[in-house]
Image (cartoon, rainbow, N blue to C red; front, side, top):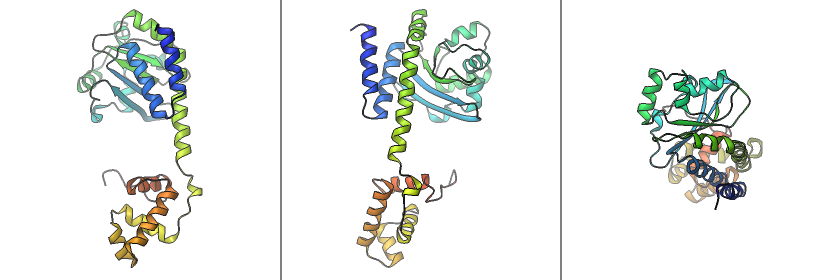
Length: 254
């Protein structure tokens, strides 16, 4: 199968994937296979919030430890981000080319790359042409990327950007579809009490003793909560209730 036919088939598989997670995995695999990358990172910087950074790391072997992933300030200071933030270029580029052109790596960049175990062999795939902040993929390979790799990725950019947007919208729509609306969830006073006790880690027996009811009745309340919150277990019910504002979200570190 030639390259064009392979991408047509892969695009069809992504567009027809039954779940956003499958579509995402297909896109990652196609991108990494095309660029022979060891790591592919989806990065999103938000112009409206300088401290916000969306990042997802995919690797063929082991994903680098999350504690070493860059924060927004580090991502903005990186030469790749600086380049797209100060030029109108939105084509793929190699970090090695930018460094050779004078877009130097600072000490913090070198330290962050050393912590992640990566080199300067990085290549971008910008996915959002508008705006000054970088939003797209960065692929990494310890052996580097050839001129052919760069030109092929540039030729594929319109298709890959479209598939990336499809996966993003598919994910958002699925999340809206699966998450109940806050005004659509009505809990009885007793269900609210059971939910709060569940969030504290109380067992069904402990809840029954606290409320002077039978454990069987507690289980019935839990079944109703799972149905209303579209949850499958205690943890997912509590998390759903927190997202909807029905339970307070614990402070970080608590």
